[in-house]
Image (cartoon, rainbow, N blue to C red; front, side):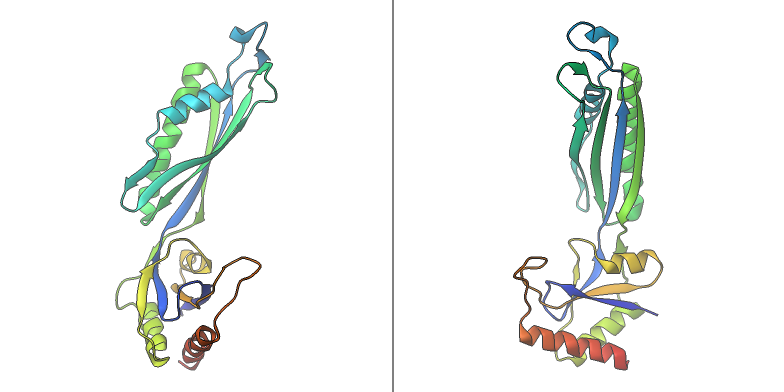
Length: 212
């Protein structure tokens, strides 16, 4: 059994033979609140803990297919209190699932070191937003995809997906899947549309797969 997803802005004939995965992480940092005006030395700033951890990280590109980023930081309640808590969120993007854990472990370690040095604490969590996949040339799912495309009069063009969709979810469950382009334009916007020629060719590909 194989699964086939239709709905991307790729032109008909183009399909995803591989896709990166995104691991989402969060660091909940706990310090100790105190009056910042009269007793700052009694407090432990959760924001300072987070800032020192982030400053020690090597974020950005790790290799050609692996990147990491911290996207949001939140913490504190007002300017007069040493912040009790801070929340940091980010992501690691990988083409190979095995490369995610070393990067995540490195991030976790720096937050734990920073928290311990200040006398605070941190809870680090991560989960897959979607897992990566890579189909080998000649695999059944690629063979069926290319046959359906050729039978519609098009030339198959395998590409690496820039993001994730339902195909990632199917592959993560053990059901081999690829995503076909349908030529959608202005995707996920109010003026989204598809050319009739693209719709007709995408329909032919669907019909070919059903008949197969």
